[in-house]
Image (cartoon, rainbow, N blue to C red; front, side, top):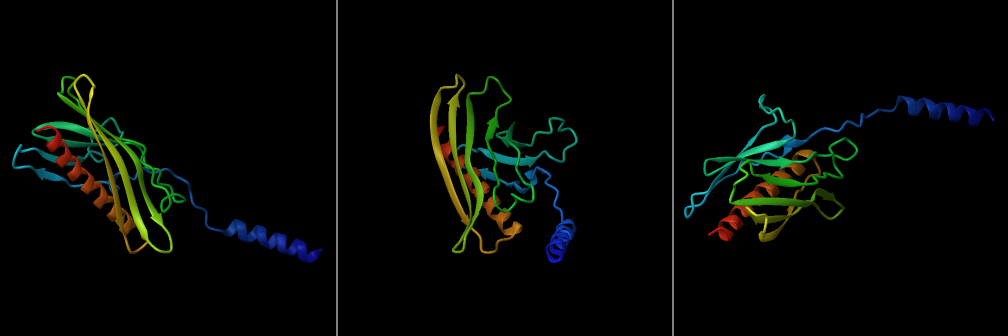
Amino acid sequence: MKKIVFFLLLGLFLASCSVKVKNVNNTGYNYLQPEVSNVSKKNEIKINSVNLDNVESNRLKNNYILYESNGVYNYFAYSKWINSPPTMLKDFILENIRYIKQDPYAKYRLKILLFNYEPHFNNKESFFYFKARAFLYNSQYELLASKMFDYKKDFKKNTNESMLDAAGKATQEFLENLNEWLLGVLK
């Protein structure tokens, strides 16, 4: 009986001394800062993205990227990352991405739904998976075209840095391919 009590007390003591991790949700937005500057010789469309997280005048506090296209500024909006320590290496869930046009009289509108944006780890391979569908609408919200984008970026080391690097590469490739697709559709 004394041994049982001793082991119970020892177990309680060890459990109380273990490292506690706060489960704090943290917007990991600045992990996704694709520097995209695409210039097409045909239509001279240029996209520059700027992170607004550290801009004092960004009173919306809702994780927007400002981007410029042909001198017109629009917003690339992200929802929240779930980036707490228990999920950091397991599930990066970004629910939705949308390009939001500020101009109510804009000729075209683009909506992007993000289906998968997460790293995968197993004994054979480690990769970052990105899957999204883009919808292009006219000003009356009639669907003109849609396209699925699918990326798988391998990384060798299972570290945050290599995982985020793969995420950045997938995002940058997505923005470049999105721009090419839009140029083709809007010729």
